[in-house]
Image (cartoon, rainbow, N blue to C red; front, side, top):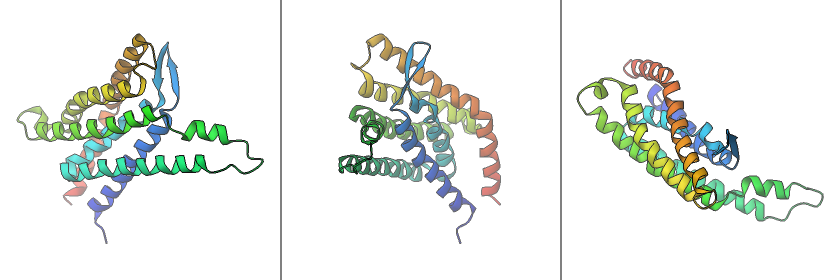
Length: 211
């Protein structure tokens, strides 16, 4: 029977992989934030960093890396399946083909930007997180300090890669720049808002890990 730590890893891995797929689907929509075009993926994507921090904290960088790669591969599989299904001839009388293709036929630039940003930023996040954990001072003592410190840098890389690949040249430059800055600020803001809950979860799990 798997122990608590093994069961928890299964949940973490499932949530991490699922969050990426959900954010890619949500990113198809651009919503209006006071004149700024923002992709819908920013609503859920910061959760990947929160889960990633918990994984690297309790399971180490190697396992965290494997989960990132698994998330990447599963999303590639999902994209392939969606494109195959779109290409299949629609049944007579089913009038949702265009709508289905619009939603699940990922724009190549968006999906490429999303996957590259996910892999690169999360790997960077894990590296910085572990360096901070092994560093003297507040970062070694505080999980939240490590989580927010690593995310501050990783989100920069994420916003740069995703926004550049997905929207540079598609949106006017001032809108592109505003969206990239807003995506970064919103992502960090979500983590700051949820950091107290994340700290409680980390502390609770640490207690269970050593039981």
